[in-house]
Picture 1 (cartoon, protein in one colour):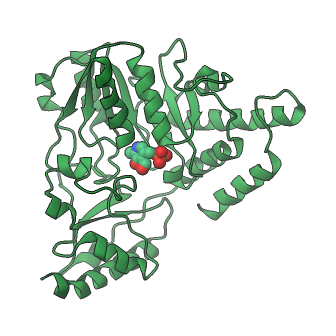
Picture 2 (tube, protein in one colour):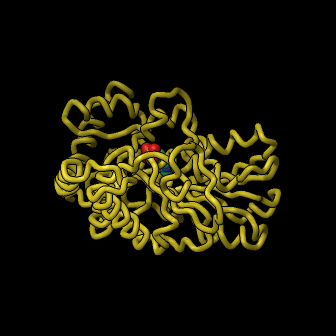
Length: 356
Ligand SMILES: Cc1ncc(COP(=O)(O)O)c(C=O)c1O
Protein backbone atom coordinates (compact mmCIF):
# COMPACT_ATOMS: atom_id res chain seq x y z
CA UNK A 1 0.00 0.00 0.00
CA UNK A 2 1.37 3.48 -0.75
CA UNK A 3 2.46 5.08 2.56
CA UNK A 4 -0.13 7.88 2.42
CA UNK A 5 -2.99 5.37 1.91
CA UNK A 6 -1.69 3.09 4.65
CA UNK A 7 -1.47 5.99 7.12
CA UNK A 8 -5.01 7.14 6.22
CA UNK A 9 -6.25 3.56 6.75
CA UNK A 10 -4.48 3.17 10.11
CA UNK A 11 -5.59 6.63 11.25
CA UNK A 12 -9.22 5.72 10.48
CA UNK A 13 -8.93 2.35 12.20
CA UNK A 14 -7.93 4.24 15.31
CA UNK A 15 -10.38 7.12 15.01
CA UNK A 16 -13.42 5.40 13.40
CA UNK A 17 -13.75 1.84 14.72
CA UNK A 18 -17.44 2.57 15.34
CA UNK A 19 -20.40 0.87 13.78
CA UNK A 20 -21.80 3.16 11.08
CA UNK A 21 -25.24 1.62 11.64
CA UNK A 22 -25.66 2.92 15.21
CA UNK A 23 -27.25 6.17 16.38
CA UNK A 24 -24.75 7.36 18.97
CA UNK A 25 -22.60 10.31 17.95
CA UNK A 26 -19.47 8.28 17.11
CA UNK A 27 -21.57 5.92 15.00
CA UNK A 28 -22.99 8.91 13.13
CA UNK A 29 -19.45 10.15 12.51
CA UNK A 30 -18.52 6.76 11.07
CA UNK A 31 -21.68 6.94 8.96
CA UNK A 32 -20.64 10.36 7.63
CA UNK A 33 -17.21 8.93 6.68
CA UNK A 34 -18.89 6.00 4.95
CA UNK A 35 -21.18 8.27 2.94
CA UNK A 36 -18.22 10.51 2.02
CA UNK A 37 -16.46 7.45 0.60
CA UNK A 38 -19.59 6.37 -1.27
CA UNK A 39 -20.18 9.83 -2.75
CA UNK A 40 -16.51 10.21 -3.70
CA UNK A 41 -16.30 6.86 -5.48
CA UNK A 42 -19.67 7.37 -7.17
CA UNK A 43 -18.53 10.73 -8.50
CA UNK A 44 -15.38 9.10 -9.98
CA UNK A 45 -17.74 6.72 -11.78
CA UNK A 46 -20.21 9.40 -12.87
CA UNK A 47 -22.91 7.56 -10.87
CA UNK A 48 -25.31 8.27 -8.02
CA UNK A 49 -24.07 7.44 -4.49
CA UNK A 50 -27.23 5.39 -3.91
CA UNK A 51 -26.11 3.06 -6.73
CA UNK A 52 -22.89 2.00 -4.99
CA UNK A 53 -22.79 -0.99 -2.62
CA UNK A 54 -19.62 -1.79 -0.66
CA UNK A 55 -18.46 -5.42 -0.68
CA UNK A 56 -15.53 -7.49 0.55
CA UNK A 57 -13.80 -7.19 -2.83
CA UNK A 58 -14.11 -7.85 -6.54
CA UNK A 59 -15.08 -11.50 -6.06
CA UNK A 60 -18.10 -10.68 -3.94
CA UNK A 61 -19.02 -7.81 -6.26
CA UNK A 62 -19.03 -10.15 -9.28
CA UNK A 63 -21.04 -12.82 -7.45
CA UNK A 64 -23.57 -10.24 -6.29
CA UNK A 65 -23.79 -8.81 -9.81
CA UNK A 66 -24.65 -12.22 -11.29
CA UNK A 67 -27.17 -12.90 -8.52
CA UNK A 68 -28.79 -9.49 -9.02
CA UNK A 69 -28.89 -9.63 -12.80
CA UNK A 70 -30.06 -13.22 -13.16
CA UNK A 71 -32.85 -12.53 -10.67
CA UNK A 72 -34.95 -15.47 -9.57
CA UNK A 73 -35.45 -16.46 -13.21
CA UNK A 74 -35.11 -20.12 -14.01
CA UNK A 75 -33.85 -20.48 -17.53
CA UNK A 76 -32.36 -17.83 -19.74
CA UNK A 77 -29.43 -17.26 -21.99
CA UNK A 78 -26.17 -15.64 -20.87
CA UNK A 79 -23.14 -14.51 -22.85
CA UNK A 80 -19.88 -14.56 -20.94
CA UNK A 81 -16.43 -13.56 -22.07
CA UNK A 82 -14.28 -16.69 -22.38
CA UNK A 83 -11.48 -14.80 -20.62
CA UNK A 84 -13.56 -13.64 -17.63
CA UNK A 85 -12.09 -13.84 -14.13
CA UNK A 86 -13.29 -16.99 -12.28
CA UNK A 87 -15.20 -14.79 -9.82
CA UNK A 88 -17.44 -13.81 -12.74
CA UNK A 89 -17.34 -16.98 -14.86
CA UNK A 90 -18.04 -19.43 -12.01
CA UNK A 91 -21.24 -17.86 -10.62
CA UNK A 92 -22.48 -17.72 -14.21
CA UNK A 93 -21.70 -21.41 -14.66
CA UNK A 94 -23.74 -22.00 -11.50
CA UNK A 95 -26.79 -20.63 -13.33
CA UNK A 96 -26.80 -23.78 -15.47
CA UNK A 97 -28.29 -25.59 -12.46
CA UNK A 98 -31.27 -23.26 -12.82
CA UNK A 99 -31.70 -24.03 -16.49
CA UNK A 100 -29.66 -21.18 -17.97
CA UNK A 101 -27.76 -21.66 -21.21
CA UNK A 102 -24.26 -20.19 -21.27
CA UNK A 103 -22.44 -18.98 -24.38
CA UNK A 104 -18.74 -18.24 -24.15
CA UNK A 105 -17.92 -15.20 -26.25
CA UNK A 106 -15.22 -15.94 -28.78
CA UNK A 107 -12.05 -13.88 -28.60
CA UNK A 108 -9.47 -12.90 -31.17
CA UNK A 109 -6.01 -14.41 -31.06
CA UNK A 110 -4.81 -11.60 -28.75
CA UNK A 111 -7.64 -12.39 -26.35
CA UNK A 112 -9.89 -9.39 -27.04
CA UNK A 113 -13.59 -9.97 -27.64
CA UNK A 114 -14.55 -10.58 -31.23
CA UNK A 115 -17.79 -8.59 -31.32
CA UNK A 116 -18.61 -9.23 -35.00
CA UNK A 117 -19.25 -12.98 -34.76
CA UNK A 118 -21.71 -12.46 -31.90
CA UNK A 119 -24.52 -12.22 -34.47
CA UNK A 120 -24.59 -16.02 -34.61
CA UNK A 121 -25.26 -16.51 -30.87
CA UNK A 122 -28.62 -16.95 -29.18
CA UNK A 123 -30.16 -13.66 -28.04
CA UNK A 124 -28.98 -13.07 -24.43
CA UNK A 125 -30.84 -12.15 -21.24
CA UNK A 126 -27.55 -11.48 -19.49
CA UNK A 127 -24.11 -10.44 -20.76
CA UNK A 128 -20.97 -10.48 -18.60
CA UNK A 129 -17.46 -9.42 -19.57
CA UNK A 130 -14.34 -7.99 -17.98
CA UNK A 131 -13.26 -4.48 -18.97
CA UNK A 132 -9.49 -5.09 -18.65
CA UNK A 133 -8.30 -8.69 -18.66
CA UNK A 134 -6.37 -9.55 -15.53
CA UNK A 135 -3.81 -11.76 -17.26
CA UNK A 136 -3.11 -10.50 -20.75
CA UNK A 137 -4.04 -6.89 -20.06
CA UNK A 138 -6.22 -6.33 -23.15
CA UNK A 139 -9.03 -3.82 -22.95
CA UNK A 140 -12.40 -5.04 -24.18
CA UNK A 141 -14.28 -3.04 -26.81
CA UNK A 142 -17.12 -2.22 -24.40
CA UNK A 143 -18.88 0.35 -26.59
CA UNK A 144 -18.97 -2.01 -29.58
CA UNK A 145 -20.25 -4.83 -27.37
CA UNK A 146 -22.93 -2.61 -25.83
CA UNK A 147 -24.03 -1.48 -29.32
CA UNK A 148 -24.34 -5.13 -30.34
CA UNK A 149 -26.32 -5.97 -27.19
CA UNK A 150 -28.60 -2.93 -27.67
CA UNK A 151 -29.28 -4.06 -31.25
CA UNK A 152 -29.79 -7.77 -30.50
CA UNK A 153 -31.24 -7.80 -27.00
CA UNK A 154 -32.12 -4.34 -25.65
CA UNK A 155 -33.62 -5.84 -22.48
CA UNK A 156 -30.52 -7.89 -21.59
CA UNK A 157 -28.74 -7.05 -18.35
CA UNK A 158 -25.04 -6.27 -18.67
CA UNK A 159 -22.32 -6.89 -16.06
CA UNK A 160 -18.82 -5.48 -16.50
CA UNK A 161 -15.99 -6.51 -14.20
CA UNK A 162 -14.13 -3.23 -13.81
CA UNK A 163 -11.63 -4.44 -11.20
CA UNK A 164 -8.48 -4.15 -13.32
CA UNK A 165 -9.30 -0.86 -15.00
CA UNK A 166 -10.93 1.29 -12.36
CA UNK A 167 -8.95 4.45 -11.51
CA UNK A 168 -6.14 3.32 -13.80
CA UNK A 169 -7.82 3.95 -17.16
CA UNK A 170 -10.43 6.63 -17.98
CA UNK A 171 -13.80 5.28 -16.81
CA UNK A 172 -16.01 4.12 -19.68
CA UNK A 173 -19.60 5.34 -19.95
CA UNK A 174 -21.55 3.25 -17.46
CA UNK A 175 -25.12 4.33 -18.22
CA UNK A 176 -25.84 1.28 -20.38
CA UNK A 177 -24.53 -1.17 -17.75
CA UNK A 178 -26.44 -2.77 -14.90
CA UNK A 179 -23.49 -3.79 -12.75
CA UNK A 180 -19.84 -2.70 -12.59
CA UNK A 181 -17.46 -4.34 -10.07
CA UNK A 182 -14.53 -2.68 -8.32
CA UNK A 183 -11.75 -3.85 -6.02
CA UNK A 184 -9.58 -1.68 -3.76
CA UNK A 185 -6.34 -3.65 -3.63
CA UNK A 186 -5.59 -3.29 -7.36
CA UNK A 187 -5.03 0.42 -6.89
CA UNK A 188 -3.18 0.46 -3.59
CA UNK A 189 -6.27 0.30 -1.37
CA UNK A 190 -6.78 -2.26 1.39
CA UNK A 191 -7.40 -5.91 0.46
CA UNK A 192 -10.82 -7.26 1.41
CA UNK A 193 -12.63 -4.18 0.14
CA UNK A 194 -14.55 -3.55 -3.07
CA UNK A 195 -17.78 -2.18 -4.42
CA UNK A 196 -20.50 -2.87 -6.94
CA UNK A 197 -22.24 -0.21 -8.93
CA UNK A 198 -25.83 -1.33 -9.53
CA UNK A 199 -27.93 0.54 -12.02
CA UNK A 200 -31.65 0.11 -12.63
CA UNK A 201 -32.74 -2.20 -9.78
CA UNK A 202 -35.95 -1.09 -8.05
CA UNK A 203 -35.53 -3.68 -5.26
CA UNK A 204 -32.42 -5.12 -3.57
CA UNK A 205 -31.59 -8.74 -4.23
CA UNK A 206 -28.97 -9.68 -1.63
CA UNK A 207 -26.85 -12.81 -1.58
CA UNK A 208 -26.65 -12.82 2.23
CA UNK A 209 -29.23 -11.93 4.83
CA UNK A 210 -28.82 -9.88 7.96
CA UNK A 211 -29.37 -6.33 9.10
CA UNK A 212 -30.27 -4.66 5.81
CA UNK A 213 -27.18 -2.44 5.50
CA UNK A 214 -26.11 -1.05 2.13
CA UNK A 215 -29.65 -0.40 0.97
CA UNK A 216 -30.58 -4.00 1.73
CA UNK A 217 -28.01 -5.32 -0.78
CA UNK A 218 -25.25 -6.37 1.57
CA UNK A 219 -25.83 -6.93 5.27
CA UNK A 220 -23.12 -6.55 7.91
CA UNK A 221 -21.22 -3.70 9.52
CA UNK A 222 -19.34 -1.85 6.78
CA UNK A 223 -15.54 -1.60 7.16
CA UNK A 224 -15.53 2.21 7.22
CA UNK A 225 -11.72 2.63 7.47
CA UNK A 226 -11.30 0.33 4.45
CA UNK A 227 -13.84 2.11 2.23
CA UNK A 228 -12.42 5.53 3.17
CA UNK A 229 -8.92 4.28 2.27
CA UNK A 230 -10.38 2.83 -0.96
CA UNK A 231 -11.58 6.31 -1.95
CA UNK A 232 -8.19 7.82 -1.07
CA UNK A 233 -6.45 5.16 -3.19
CA UNK A 234 -8.80 5.75 -6.15
CA UNK A 235 -8.29 9.52 -6.02
CA UNK A 236 -4.54 9.03 -5.83
CA UNK A 237 -4.44 6.48 -8.69
CA UNK A 238 -6.57 8.68 -10.95
CA UNK A 239 -3.98 11.42 -10.81
CA UNK A 240 -1.05 9.18 -11.69
CA UNK A 241 0.25 7.88 -14.99
CA UNK A 242 1.34 4.30 -15.59
CA UNK A 243 5.11 3.84 -15.63
CA UNK A 244 6.35 3.88 -19.24
CA UNK A 245 7.31 0.55 -20.80
CA UNK A 246 11.12 0.48 -21.10
CA UNK A 247 11.25 -1.05 -24.60
CA UNK A 248 15.05 -0.52 -24.82
CA UNK A 249 15.58 -3.12 -22.07
CA UNK A 250 14.18 -5.79 -24.40
CA UNK A 251 16.41 -5.13 -27.41
CA UNK A 252 18.50 -8.12 -28.51
CA UNK A 253 17.86 -11.57 -27.09
CA UNK A 254 15.14 -11.07 -24.48
CA UNK A 255 11.61 -12.16 -23.55
CA UNK A 256 9.01 -10.69 -25.89
CA UNK A 257 5.79 -8.93 -24.85
CA UNK A 258 2.69 -10.84 -26.02
CA UNK A 259 0.80 -7.96 -27.54
CA UNK A 260 -1.14 -7.65 -30.76
CA UNK A 261 -0.64 -4.18 -32.32
CA UNK A 262 -4.33 -4.04 -33.32
CA UNK A 263 -5.58 -4.48 -29.73
CA UNK A 264 -5.72 -1.86 -26.95
CA UNK A 265 -3.98 -2.91 -23.73
CA UNK A 266 -3.72 -1.60 -20.20
CA UNK A 267 -0.28 -0.10 -19.59
CA UNK A 268 -0.33 -1.78 -16.16
CA UNK A 269 -0.38 -5.44 -17.26
CA UNK A 270 2.11 -7.04 -19.62
CA UNK A 271 2.57 -10.73 -20.43
CA UNK A 272 6.01 -11.77 -21.60
CA UNK A 273 6.83 -14.77 -23.75
CA UNK A 274 9.84 -16.12 -21.85
CA UNK A 275 10.46 -19.18 -24.01
CA UNK A 276 12.44 -21.34 -23.78
CA UNK A 277 12.75 -20.45 -20.07
CA UNK A 278 9.84 -21.51 -17.87
CA UNK A 279 8.08 -18.54 -16.29
CA UNK A 280 8.00 -20.10 -12.84
CA UNK A 281 11.76 -20.72 -12.80
CA UNK A 282 12.42 -17.13 -13.86
CA UNK A 283 9.94 -15.88 -11.25
CA UNK A 284 11.73 -17.69 -8.41
CA UNK A 285 15.13 -16.45 -9.55
CA UNK A 286 13.82 -12.87 -9.55
CA UNK A 287 12.18 -13.36 -6.17
CA UNK A 288 15.60 -14.15 -4.74
CA UNK A 289 16.53 -10.62 -5.86
CA UNK A 290 13.42 -9.08 -4.21
CA UNK A 291 11.64 -8.60 -7.55
CA UNK A 292 8.11 -9.94 -7.19
CA UNK A 293 6.44 -10.86 -10.47
CA UNK A 294 3.35 -13.03 -10.94
CA UNK A 295 2.97 -15.95 -13.30
CA UNK A 296 -0.60 -15.26 -14.29
CA UNK A 297 -3.55 -14.32 -12.18
CA UNK A 298 -3.02 -14.91 -8.45
CA UNK A 299 -6.15 -17.03 -8.20
CA UNK A 300 -5.07 -19.47 -10.92
CA UNK A 301 -1.36 -19.76 -10.17
CA UNK A 302 -1.79 -22.61 -7.70
CA UNK A 303 -3.82 -24.64 -10.17
CA UNK A 304 -2.53 -26.84 -12.94
CA UNK A 305 -3.57 -26.38 -16.53
CA UNK A 306 -4.29 -23.38 -18.68
CA UNK A 307 -5.87 -20.22 -17.32
CA UNK A 308 -9.06 -19.03 -19.07
CA UNK A 309 -7.26 -16.12 -20.75
CA UNK A 310 -4.38 -18.25 -22.00
CA UNK A 311 -6.73 -20.93 -23.31
CA UNK A 312 -8.95 -18.38 -25.05
CA UNK A 313 -5.94 -16.64 -26.56
CA UNK A 314 -4.88 -19.96 -28.08
CA UNK A 315 -1.74 -20.63 -26.00
CA UNK A 316 -0.79 -24.27 -25.58
CA UNK A 317 0.09 -25.55 -22.10
CA UNK A 318 3.75 -25.60 -23.17
CA UNK A 319 3.58 -21.93 -24.25
CA UNK A 320 1.58 -20.91 -21.19
CA UNK A 321 4.30 -22.29 -18.91
CA UNK A 322 6.74 -20.05 -20.75
CA UNK A 323 5.03 -16.78 -19.95
CA UNK A 324 5.32 -14.33 -17.11
CA UNK A 325 2.83 -11.63 -16.22
CA UNK A 326 4.31 -8.32 -15.19
CA UNK A 327 2.07 -5.79 -13.49
CA UNK A 328 2.72 -2.32 -12.15
CA UNK A 329 1.14 -0.10 -9.55
CA UNK A 330 -0.08 3.43 -10.23
CA UNK A 331 2.71 5.87 -9.52
CA UNK A 332 5.46 3.24 -9.52
CA UNK A 333 8.65 5.11 -10.51
CA UNK A 334 9.81 4.55 -14.10
CA UNK A 335 13.36 3.86 -12.86
CA UNK A 336 12.13 1.09 -10.54
CA UNK A 337 10.20 -0.57 -13.39
CA UNK A 338 13.11 -0.27 -15.84
CA UNK A 339 15.54 -1.64 -13.21
CA UNK A 340 13.33 -4.63 -12.41
CA UNK A 341 12.81 -5.47 -16.08
CA UNK A 342 16.52 -5.08 -16.86
CA UNK A 343 17.21 -7.58 -14.03
CA UNK A 344 14.58 -9.89 -15.54
CA UNK A 345 16.33 -9.85 -18.91
CA UNK A 346 19.74 -10.51 -17.31
CA UNK A 347 18.29 -13.43 -15.32
CA UNK A 348 16.52 -14.82 -18.40
CA UNK A 349 19.79 -14.75 -20.39
CA UNK A 350 21.60 -16.52 -17.54
CA UNK A 351 18.93 -19.25 -17.49
CA UNK A 352 18.95 -19.83 -21.24
CA UNK A 353 21.72 -22.42 -21.13
CA UNK A 354 19.58 -24.66 -18.92
CA UNK A 355 16.67 -24.61 -21.32
CA UNK A 356 18.32 -24.72 -24.75
C1 LIG B 1 -10.55 -8.91 -13.22
C2 LIG B 1 -10.69 -9.32 -11.79
N1 LIG B 1 -11.91 -9.48 -11.27
C3 LIG B 1 -12.10 -9.84 -9.99
C4 LIG B 1 -11.04 -10.08 -9.16
C5 LIG B 1 -11.29 -10.50 -7.73
O1 LIG B 1 -11.07 -9.43 -6.88
P1 LIG B 1 -10.76 -9.66 -5.30
O2 LIG B 1 -9.39 -10.19 -5.22
O3 LIG B 1 -10.90 -8.25 -4.74
O4 LIG B 1 -11.80 -10.56 -4.79
C6 LIG B 1 -9.74 -9.92 -9.65
C7 LIG B 1 -8.59 -10.19 -8.77
O5 LIG B 1 -7.50 -10.46 -9.20
C8 LIG B 1 -9.55 -9.53 -10.99
O6 LIG B 1 -8.35 -9.36 -11.51
